[in-house]
Image 1 (tube, rainbow, N blue to C red):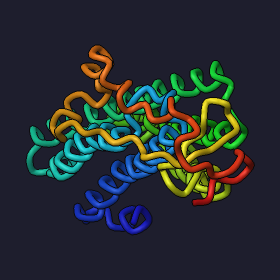
Image 2: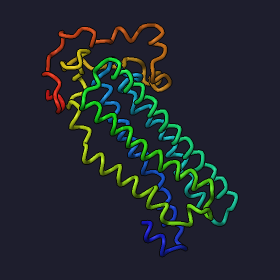
Image 3: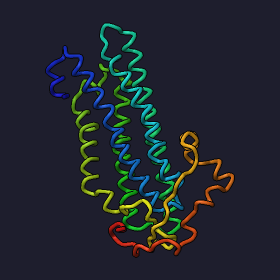
Image 4: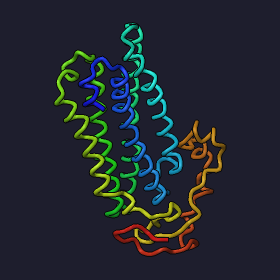
Amino acid sequence: MREVAAYNTEGVGYFVATSVMLLLAPPIYAGANYFILGRTLYYIPYLSPIHPGRVVSTFIGLDVIVEILTGTAAPRVANLDRPDQIAVGAAMIKAALILQLAIFLLFVAVTAVFHLRCVRAGVFARKIRIVVVLLYVSTALMLARGVYRTVEFFEGYGGYLSTHEPFFWVFEASLMFANSAMLNVWFPARYLPRSNKVFLCKDGVTEEVGPGWVDKRPFLVTLLDPFDLVGLIKGRDKATAFWEAQGTGSSVRENGAGGARV
């Protein structure tokens, strides 16, 4: 699409399509990371800083805001007959890019808290370490790409980055290709159980099949309070700590290189 747009400079449709795809593709990669982190937190639920089932809904919800801003801004930027609309669209894209960077940093913070807790608890096994490193590297690649895009839009379409194609191939195409290749070579599902009901016991070795961690709060409440801060204050989370009763669930097998099979 970018190649076609380069030889059809009068085709506004090509420009809009190229802009939308470039801006909307990274959140899809980010969504994959949200699923991976959520599944990892299900595996070690007692160290999770956020309800595992709410990782995806929380971060996807934030990404939806980015997508709406981007999708709304792209046609405005391409409206050459309305300079005022171009300025509005550019401002919306800048806001979306800054918000996206903030979401990436929040995701890294949640991952880092989980990482630190695993190390302190002595359950940071090799397969969990691989998954966490994948999340760090993938997020770092997207963060670098996000910084590039943010600087590019703040410079404007006549800026140095926008008028020099090599920057696109280094900080956009190469980074996203590296991210795709990495997640295919080190496929995260190889290191996690097939079922999210399988969890690692606190001994760091035994895996058991539990009832899973179900959030029984109303859906709207879970969106407004994904971390269940009210539950933490009232001690409600202790009532669902099924991992405390180790030995009452179905034993899977000892923790090995591959994921548990149920």
